[in-house]
Amino acid sequence: MQGSVATDAPVKTGLSTTELERRGTRFAFGAPVTGAVTVGETVVVSFGDGMLRFFRADQMPQELRLHDGVVLALAADGDGHVVTGGDDGQFLRTSLEGDIEQLEDFGTRWVDCVAASHGHRACSSGKQAHVWTAGQDKVTVFEHASTIGGLAFDVKGKRLAVAYYGGATVWAREKRWKSSKLVWKGFHGDTCFSPDGKYLVTCMQENALHAWRLRDKGDFAMPGYPSKIKSLAWVGNTPHVVTSGADEAIAWPFDGKDGPLGRKPVCVAYNEDELVTCVRALPEQEAVFAGFRDGAVLLAELDETKNAIVISGSTGAEVTAIIVAGLFILVGDAKGNVLWAPLWEGTSFAQHI
Image (tube, rainbow, N blue to C red):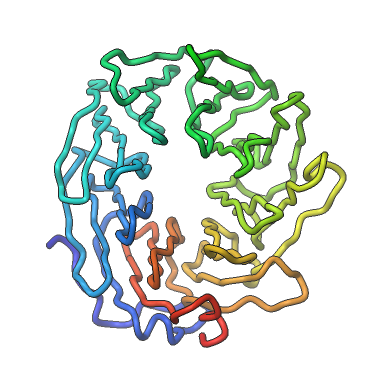
């Protein structure tokens, strides 16, 4: 196996080691963690050296060399597979058993973004979005005005959002694909639909969040972030969209007729002026994990009156991935370090840390 189990405690720069870290295992793989998704009880992690690694309870991680270069994008497919894109121009579909299917080879053009849902697999290369649909041989290609920054399907797999400079396009599939353009000046990157499908949210290069209400294209600007938003997650039943990009996790409410319009966000998980670089919802809870530039991870309820809980201490390396699968949590960082640790049983494990 490339990489190694870290036997010495990592160098700390701030928050100290936690009980969760002590009962977990740290791995040093030597290449940045670029993404992580769950497929059933398995966590699949992508790396900057082209590797995928599969983490399962009570097992050493299995690994697979996949791309000749950086794995730029990773998404779970619905039937025990993942799809990936790389700077080697490959768009690949891989099973948990390590079977690899090449969906497309774009040559020298990078595959920047990928998405999958309900039999659809999509990727972007340059200004084009390519969509494969199960049972159909022909690939659908959508051309856009500028380089694509983000792709996302809605929860039913019936709409594909494509973000780029100047806004986003939502492609809806009935008998054929139809497009609806959403306009806002600036470059739009990572994007996602709200769980109820009513809103589309994008992260902007200009240190801002933007959202559209899809029924009437009403839009909401959420500027003022001190840094680029690298991560966002939908949390709770309200729901809130929680983002990185500030010294706290910023949670915007999307309930009611107008969502965040005219409302203040909930701000939680403060860590002494360190910037949040990664966020992830705690499943089935009104709570969020926030990973920081210094490597620390906090767990906070969406309640400003309550203190956050330290999940892992500072390591000096930016957190790039957090994910929960069953009773385990995985934290990955920009130096290739991975923490794989069991959580307490039940939903109240935070009380024990």
